[in-house]
Image 1 (cartoon, helix red, strand yellow):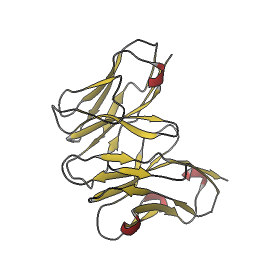
Image 2: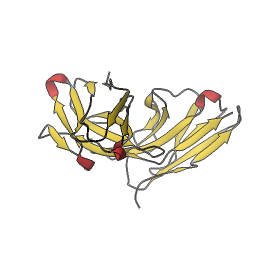
Image 3: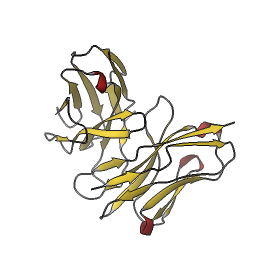
Image 4: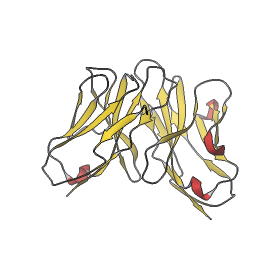
Length: 114
Length: 113
């Protein structure tokens, strides 16, 4: 069965600190990987996605993620966080072919302290 | 603007009442989804519809029914609301190409007293 694990449930950082949020997935076939962000009171918005090619993916607002196939990981990074990055972050996997089965991780709440 | 539209945005119900959450998308997407979001549990899939005329259970379907009225609309019904169904509900849709992300509605915050 397809699954996604986000091991960090709540992360607190000071502004300008570096961020890395873990995401591991399990699925035997080809997957497409996504990171979404949800600001307080809002819906999920796409940060970045990976489906093929360069495993280092750059998204909006200075975020990037690296797909490491051997580790089944797709960790999200940002060199220097800002207070406005305070939000909840979700990793998601969509399996390829036929019906697009979507599986989300349980989310990581990031709190950035000014 | 193109996207996913959910109504209502907020609703308070009494235990045992029924209601339908509406969702419509204007992107000609085939697949539509209903999720509930609860603290610490991420998004859990309630029902999905791979195409017009088909619906299937997701992870947490009990207490809910859905209708894929046409390609645009996918409604979620609570027949007899229970306090455990207090949650934020999101509708989403996705096109046929699997490397495309889901598009989400703004959510419905539902409280059952």
